Structures are given as structure tokens and as C-alpha cells.
Image (cartoon, rainbow, N blue to C red; front, side, top):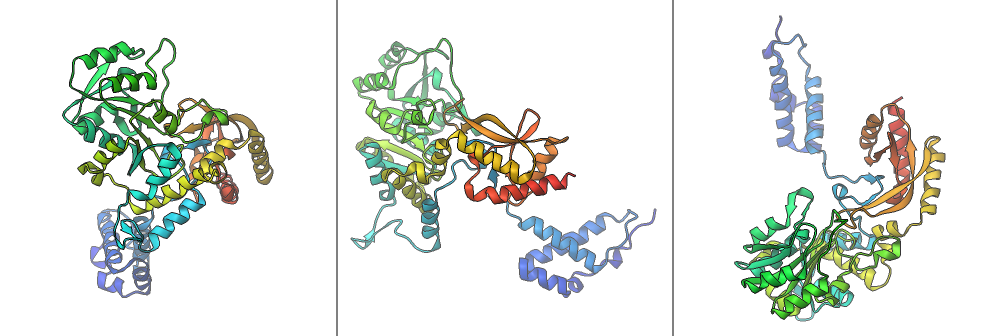
Length: 455
């Protein structure tokens, strides 16, 4: 078998002096372009025993350009969520309001008052930016913002129960996405887990018996964010747990998980305890996420007793998990929507939750008309994102037939922007509930291109 004459490969210096190289250097910089040229040469050398012909300089530069394009292509890109899952964890959960995006952009473009007091002309605290808003909205004495809810729970346990025991019912030993387990967090915090009750039933007497043994630092309640217990099941209420904990001089920490400031029952969903309700029931610290039902950026929020929040604010872990200026800006703008009673109008996830199925049906019919294909079918949208497990909302989706639906799904993902749909009864389903109005044009164009590519 003939082999390539490796001596015929154009030298690096020669390739660097071509017009093509000059263009690539202008776009990608000299070091990366040089690396790509050498990689293209190595690919040719790896084919030394093949029957392939020696590529000309132009061919090598084309390969170098392809390598550069692949190396510099961003992996975190906007997508159109047509799955009908409102808080889609894999797709970044809650899209932000226009005001939140503008606030983040403003904080990112230059300097800010992150830790500067304008009135005093001296160093301030980043904790002040969202605290007053959270106090007004929840009725809490104090508030603290960290980078996510797992961090909020870790901080609470580290600051209040390190080297002590934490009491929790076996009904709440949860694992959520990514292998995050409550027992593992307890272990990392330095606290020791004390489980009481059974997997389906926990009684107040179980807690009382464990408390009598001593060494308990706090009582923990955790929200079952991604599953339900049905059938023969019972456990004490939050108010009962709070009363028992306070009788023994202990705090109750309530990890709400998603957390909400609005009554979900008003939107045809199961009632989800609000942050204010948890505090009113006697929880001393409530932790919850900012990027789920709150509809803001990814943060973890702790609200509750001022003395406990003050202790946590001074804990070393608080600095390790603190929120940055961009998330604080986005969170503050999001909280303002609630304060001004405009959350349903301005926050995308609440717009989606509030949209009537009749309006969604009209949008789906409009898509079918514009595309000239598809069938509008009644279905269900999911809340998702570790919020309201099993809860759905009635919707209408556009079903597209394809002999190879998986190939159509892949073709949709290959569009710019990528379109993420779901498979429903062997058909590709596009749910308007989770498609933002400004994305409809891109969606329809992308679907047209995807369908054409498979013909």
C-alpha cells in the first residue's frame, strides 16, 4: 500500500504566511491559529499508511479553520424551550424578566455599589441589596443571600449545628438532581444526622423521644421537591415541629427547596407553602431557591430570625458561598416585581403559569397554519425544576409526524437557536406554553428548516 510522503507537508512557516492564515489570526489570534495548523499537520501524518492524497496548503488551512471553529464554539447558548416543562433544570430553569436582565447588564458593564455605601462614602455590605426587599415580602426579621439553595442549607447546618445532632424525619431524607442528598449535606456541615420515624410515617412522639436523649442542635424539615408520598402516610405539621423545637429551646430550619411568594393554588395547582407561611408557622430559618418559583437568577436565600442570620453571616462558609454582583442585581430586580404587584405580568414563569389553555391553543393553531403541517392536541405542561412534583397544567401542543421522530428532534436541536422539543406518543411535540413570544419567529423558521432537511 502506498504511503504519503510526509516531506511534502507544507511547513508551518509557509502556512503562516498565507492569506488564509492572516485571516485566521485576525479572528482567532496567532497562538491558537498556530496550534490548529500543527494539529492539521498531525492529522495528515496520522494517515501516513493510507491511500489518501497529500492535501495542498489550502486544504490544510481549511482543516485548521474547522478546528478553530470547533474549539471556540460556545457550549452555553440560548435555546427555545418547546418542551412544556416550565422550570426545566437542564435548560437553565427560570428565564429572567426584562428588568432583571437590564439590572444584570448594568452591574456587569462597569463598577457598582456592591460593597460601597454612597451616603457614608466608605465600605458597605453586599448583604444589604436584597435584604430589605426580602424582609418586606416575607415578614422575616433578616435575610441572607448565597449562591444556591444547597449552599444555603449547608451554611445553616454548619453555622447552627456543627459537631451537634440534627433531627429529621425519614420521610424527608431526599435526593434531588445531580445526586444531591440531604444526609450528605449534613455530613459535610459537620453535623450528625438523627433519623426518626419510618419512610412513610413519622409521629411527633418520634421527635420527642429523640430530643429526650439530648445533643440535638436543631430540627430540620426538608421539602420533597421531586416526588410525592401517597397512601398510608403521615407526619407532623410545620407548626407542630416548631412548637416542639421551641419547647426544647431549639430552632426549626425549614428547607422549602423551590420556595414561592405567591399562592400556586390560584393558578390551578396544588397549594405550595409560601415563605411567609413557613415563617408564620414558626420556622426560625427558611431556605429556598431564587431560580425556581421565585423566577429569578440562581441564588439561595435564608430568611428568619435576626440573631440566627447574624451568626450565619459571620460564618466562614458564608464568604465561600456568597452571591456575586450579577446575581444580586438580578435578584433585586426580580423581588421588586413582587413588591410592585407585577410578578404575573413581568416574570416569565408566572406568565407561563397564568396563561389560559385557550390562548395556548390559539398559538398552537397559528403555528400549524404558518407551517402548513401538524395537529393541535390537548396535553399537559409540567411545572418541573424540583417544584410541585407531579403537578401539571392543561395545554395544547403542536404534534408533528415524522417517520423518524428522533431524527427530527436532532434536526431541531441543530438549528440556531436550537429548538428543544419532546416526544409524545411517537410524535414530536411543541408546547407553546414555554415558548416566549419573542421566540416564535425563530421557532417557526427553525422548524421549517428542520423539516426540509429531512426530506
